[in-house]
Amino acid sequence: MYSREVIEEVLSKTDIVDLVSNYVKLKRSGSSYMGLCPFHNEKSPSFSVSGPKQLFHCFGCGKGGNAITFVMEYENYTFIEALEMLAQRAGVALPEQKFSREDQMDKDIKTKLLEINKFAATYYYHCLKSEKGTTGMDYLANKRQLSDKTITSYGLGFAPISSGGLYKELKAKGYTDDILKESGLFTYDSKVHEKFWNRVIFPIMDVNNKVIGFGGRVMGDAKPKYLNSPETKLFDKSRNLYGLNVARSARKGNMIICEGYMDVISLHQAGFNQAVASLGTALTPGHARLLKRYTDTVLITYDSDEAGTKAALRAIPLLTEVGLNTKVINMKPYKDPDEFIKALGAEAFQERIDKAINSFIFEVGVVEKRHNRSDPADETAFEKELAEMFLRFGEKLERDNYIKAVCNTFVIPLDGMMQMVANLGNKKGLVNGQAIKNDYESPKPKKKKQESGIRQAEKLLLTWLINDVNIINKISDVIKPNDFIDPLLNSVASKLYVQIENGNPNPALIVGDYTDETEAADVASLFSSDLDENLSKQERERAINDIVKKVKKNSLDNEFNTTTDAKRMQEIMQEQMNLNKINIKL
Image 1 (cartoon, helix red, strand yellow):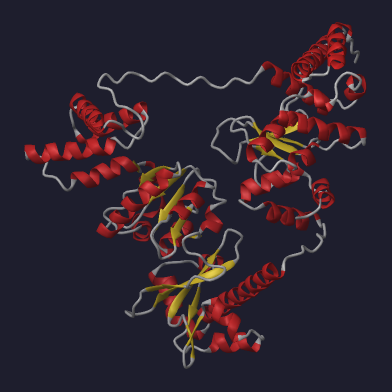
Image 2 (tube, one colour; image 1 turned 45 degrees about the horizontal axis):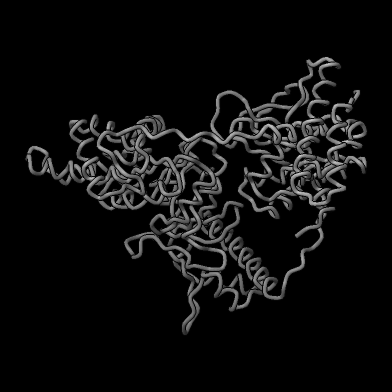
């Protein structure tokens, strides 16, 4: 972990307004800048960036923090990755990190594997552009209709039939067989064989655009048709998605999940750069969690055949489990997005996106195909199967909404289905932990937890201090950091008092001390608030006196109720009597 001094230097040399402007269009508003929040969809700007305080805060979704926090949120970086990125941007030389012997060895191996993969990707790309790659270039440019720009952007390559060239070049660069075996690019038996040959190569990149593996599509009828790198210290196919390095910055409000490399590349070339694909494996819970970091809505566009439908049905519960709004795009009469785009173009695909159906409705449609609805017995079996499906929804309102939508779409009597679901729920006793009642009484709404008046006063007092540091000289005899009872605000006050006393108030550095996302956002919100500039001097003085008295009274009451020292009790009572004598002048 880097020292506080290093972190402070990076933050002091980073202009957050300049940084955020690379990602968000900002417009000056008073002493701050406003723009559309990059972390949630909105039509009216509620995203504020303060140059003087070096903080950002969204009044819509609540996210907030300093430059490091912004990079972590937007780029999905770790703290160290964000700090190193900003340090490089600001020209700050970071001290070398000290690692244990085991960690250093692991780091060295990963560094060498990244070097090998980068070299291999370049090697395959040059092979594609040479005479050896004629077959691959014909496949990509003519059959798949990819432009030179797309081929270059995605670093596509070709592994020629005559293998051995990559191995010789890597050995000539000094890499040992031990590390080359770790790369997954070669197999070792009596001889060394290159894993990829006579294949178009798709470099697989992580979110930081580093090559972590490869996929290869064979030229001809050999099996397997597609071949991926094996698991390595860099490559875990259950935790990576092809195209995510591009899609994570698309900011389209959704992500499209496809089956293969070509689907992703074709969609990106057509302008749908929010497309990703799992890497030769079914969608996993890890993939779902990864998608949730970047979006709230996922559109499934798997192949329209039976296998694609089964894959979609497996993926839907994984995506909904992590809280993703999931829809399904209908590709028919074409098999996949690649075929669809080539036949009908981008505009038609956008229409299919706009008409994507709710994943639950899609599931119901699949179930319907298994039943002959003209047969009364089979129709009843269909409806009973649906009733079982509705029991997934624990919340009554959500369940009712789905029942109404399905009954309307599939022409089912609403009252009958409501009764069937209620009866089935009662028979089972519980639905996801909630009892089902025949009368469908509305649940009592939960009361929103209100912030106490005392906490509001403490927050407002800190806002005054950060907006006008001279106030501390006027209140320091009355209010100390320990007068802030709320644990988080007490911590913030302690840090802020020290900074002000040292003559260097730095809200961005204080926010950086809080690694918990909720706490960091709360502190950023506190420092991002502005005082009402329309207040007269008299009104400002009345406001600050009221706040100081309220905070001090609560502090004294709290201490009186917890102390057992009789002498201190007498002192507290005297201080309480003197509260009305407080008269702060601005």
